[in-house]
Each structure stands twice: as C-alpha cells, then as structure tokens.
Length: 598
Image (cartoon, rainbow, N blue to C red; front, side):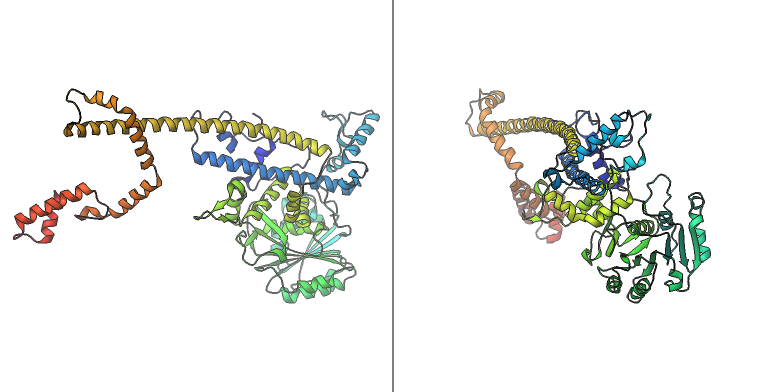
C-alpha cells in the first residue's frame, strides 16, 4: 500500500524524528518514500497489520485515533504552506493575487498554461515553466525550478563587505560565504570580503579554518584580525556595509547605544544585526536607543537568546518570534539554544527584509513541549477534563501549532532562509488567520490538494473500517465471555438453591439435582445476570476497595471493620469458649494468640 504524504508527516511528529529535514521544496511533491526500517502507527493497526488477527486493546485504538487527528492537523499546515508559497510566487513574478483573479486578472494557472504553450511552440516537450521532458533531453534550469518555491523578500543593499565582531563562529562564516555544498545559495549574499574582529586571533583561526573552508573559497574572503575592544572603532567599520555583533546581556544597556552611534555616524553601514546572549526576559535594555537611531541611515535587528549550548542536532525543534511576545516564565522553553543554530539564524536574518528593525528571540523547545507536539490539540473529542468533568485548557496548543508549522516547513523542504521568513513575517498569527478564514482557491494548487485529500480520505476510510471491524470483534468476544460467566454463576445459584430447599423439605426427594437445575434455569439466569451486573458495578468495586483497606493488617487482629460476618460470629464463640476454660490461667494477650493460631 502506498503511503501518502500525510502518513509520513505524522512520522515526523514523533520525538525520534523531530530533527528530520527535507531537501526539496516543490509544490507538486506529494509522495514520500519511507525507509523499510521505519514503522508508523498506520502499519501497526489496520491494513495487513503485522499483529495478525489479534484484537488491539483500547490503548492501542486510542493511539490510532490520536495519530489520525495529528494527521488531519498537519494537513491543514500543508494547505497553509501551499497557499503562502503560491502567494509569494505571485508577488515575486507579478502574477495576480486571489482578489485580483476574482476581478478578472490573469490567474496563476493561466500563467502556467501560457508558459507551457510557449515551450510547445518552440519545438520542445512541455514541462513546468518551459522545462524539458523527464529524460533530460531538454533540461529545466534551476531558476525555472525556483519559480515554484516560496519567495521570501530579501534585502537589496547588503554590499560587498561584512564585518563580524565578538565572534568568528564557523557556522556563521559558512552562511556568509554563501557556498554551502548541496544547499541553495542566498541570492543577495555577494560578499567579497568577510572581516572578523576577535580577542584571540590564533584560536579563531583554529576553529574557523578547515578543509571545507579552503574548498568552499572562504579563505579567499576571510580576514581575522585582533579587536581593540568589545566593539569595533569607527575606523574598523569603514567600508563595511553590513555588521554582525555579539554582546552579553550584562553589557547591553551600555553597548547597544554605542552600536547606535557607530552605525549612525558611518557612511557605509546599512545593516546591523546584534546577538545578545544570556537574555532571560522579554526586553533588552538599550534596544530602544538602537531602534530609534535606525531609519533612513541603516536597518537594525536584535536577536536575543538565553544560554548558547554547544552541540545539538541541526534542524531541531525551536521557536523564533518577536521578543515582546515572549513571556518571562515560558514552560515551552528549554532555556537556551544550540550555538550552531543561533549563528545560522544570524546569517539568515541578515538576508531578509522581514527581520529589519525587529527584536527577535529564539529558544529550543523543552522536553515537555516536544512531547506535547506529538499529541493533537486538546479540544473536541480530545478535550482534557479534571475529576469534576470541567474542561482543562490546552496550555500547549500554540506550541503544538508552531511545532506543526515548523515541521511542515521542513517536510516540504523550505530553505532555512525561507523558513525564517515564514516564522518572522507571518508567524503563528498568519497560520491562525488562515485556519479561521481559509481563502477561496481555484487554480492548479487546489487540484493537487484535492487529489491528495482524496487519497488521504481513502486511507482514513480503510482505517475506519478496520477499527470498526476490530471493535465489533472485541465486543463479540466480550459478550461471549460475559455469557459464560453468567452461566457459571447461574449454575452455582441453582446448586445452592437445591441444597437449601432440600434441607427445608421444599423439594421432593425423587427430584435430582440436574432435574432441579433444569426446572429453575430461567430464574437462575436472571439472578446470575443481576449478580454479574452488581459485581461489575462501581458500587461493588468501591465496597471491595474499602473492605481491602479495612482488612489491611488484619492478620494480627481478632476483629476489624468490614470482616466477614460468619468469621466474626465464629471467633466470638471461640473467645467465649476459651475464656471459660482458661480465664484464670491466661492473660488477654495470650488468649488472643491462641485464637489467632486456630
């Protein structure tokens, strides 16, 4: 059975797959092959289940329902990402928006048709945006392919020289070098010189210079020089059109105004990115001074993070958003972020127009948040309730939504620059707005989505049928077990009645036990069913629990609350008998020990 895109998405939601990153970003990409060693919940229950004919228990059925709900939620994310990709392409290439299409302007689908017709008239096979056929006889250029990808708005005047102060991290330098093997380059990064000012030049060169740096051409651009202070001087800033600085939150209140003065008085500087580490609140002292100084002269961006953590997997689950929106006490935050992720974030933030004059924050998700992302929103059928049945608000809903969004970006294969643009420019609010007011879409994207939804619906229908079949089989087996137990109780009741009535003379001596049981069998079944219902009722279970609690430690007691009435009567008679025989010879304690030994 072919696994749909949505099935693979759910695998990405499991904690073990959170670092998964796709490598392609095509709107037409729908089917993803899953390695044989991986198993999803879909393979655990339903079609050709490896569990055989055994009936899944309630926990397994609940897991399947939770899994399916996560699939549905993730599908909404994929629709949203398809939509914003389509809109970004329209904005970049001058194609009509949805509102303009409704007013009669040329639609996106019509533009595609025109390009295909143009390719056909030139004698080549028709491919997307004039591309060739599948065997490569008429190849499609990378620029044609990129026309189908999300198009973030990039800054236009980054210049040829970038200055880095306070760090010479290799991950940041790789991004600025813009020659990463196997990854898309950032179109507006055309730096011919990368200048790093650090305290320890020897250490910086040791960490920054590698075989990869030589092969990628970084060494041809990189200049590592000793710094004269925490911030560069005006002379050191000369010629730099972009500046990335790293400072500590302890020094931010004094250093950020100095950054503002340096940037304002520079003739060349156009863009400033400042990383502030050790931030534990939703504000950074001194940022207002830097923001006020920016404007026509330069653009500024603040990235506030907590602790920089060494190591960590690339592409982990993290949050990027507006600093002002972050709470002081955030249960979703792990309190820090891998340093490599932070420095890559800095580089990509320099490329984007959406990060200009923004104060951002970034943090890795806590383990509690990661576990929450793997479960559906706690609403509707999956609403959590307290002991009194009152609804419990889902404090992690926004974390789940953000996690779905981030994983969807990577499952489709958005570049890291495009990913950051979506998270900053549109954020969670854009996704919420899409969910609240889904736009009307009548173009090729709708067709592809409908086809995907149709395939998903088939899978869901098959799963529904399998679950219904399993539940019916389980119910039938439970009914069979109940019937057997009732018959056993009825047999015991009838035998007891025969004995009691025989002793009381109510049964003719010629009537055998078997004949008596046959004669009262209908009555016995009624009595047995009443008994069965009682011993399976909450009232009976509660009494049993109380009895068990009262009898705890009863092995050293003659009498206790809730003890069997017959046992109590028997012991009372034994006490009376022993007292008569040994009253003058034994103490109360010795008498009790004798009775307990019986």
